Image (cartoon, rainbow, N blue to C red; front, side, top):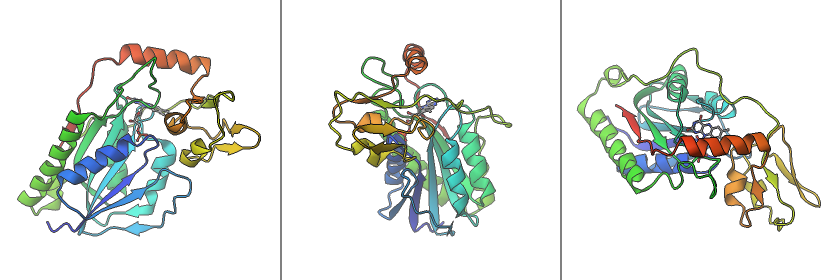
Length: 266
Ligand SMILES: Cc1cc2nc3c(=O)[nH]c(=O)nc-3n(C[C@H](O)[C@H](O)[C@H](O)COP(=O)(O)O)c2cc1C
């Protein structure tokens, strides 16, 4: 197969999904990598039709065992026209539920031929110093696995010219999918004593939930708890501090200590 460009399409508020996709592209050994980053609200997504010269890697974080609903909606702009693809989900060391199957099904629905799939681990969006969850992932070993995965995708494509044979991959998951994140009024908030009004949090918010007046204002209805603002805040003023969420974070930290390993389907 004559692949000229590897195109990375991802939603990645805390950047672990982006890092995983970059590792896979690195393993594929091409310098010709394009990013289609769906994370920020200023995303200008045109309809894109891909071709046989493109290899597309879709990457999504797992939210409640599914891919984030707002990100899933954005994928309908892309039409595969039988372009080969890999589908990748990144989860916070708990479980990836139906997310990988969902992403594969979306890719197929829009005309892509997924020849490989992977579930990798990233530091959980809710992880903090007191309650770590998958802290520091992806680590060195994870990155080595992403590169090896990229290489095995390349090997697979070099061994066959039959797209339909290559696209016979099975991934775990159930359809109908389980419900994803339960909607709630919980949101990240700001400790005004620690906040320096640097505005960094607003620049990374995927939903435009953060604005300013005399203090940082968070639109709780828009917040998807992605924690991009929490992770970039230079003074640790942003946090997930709502009591039911704090309890959940503590439980996740206790129950998800055993490091999970990437799972690859190729
Ligand atoms: C609302 C929400 C729900 C999540 N649900 C799950 C989950 O079901 N299982 C899991 O292991 N991680 C879960 N995570 C953690 C993310 O999948 C994980 O941190 C991922 O690495 C984030 O990707 P990103 O760095 O590209 O934003 C959730 C995170 C958020 C914000």
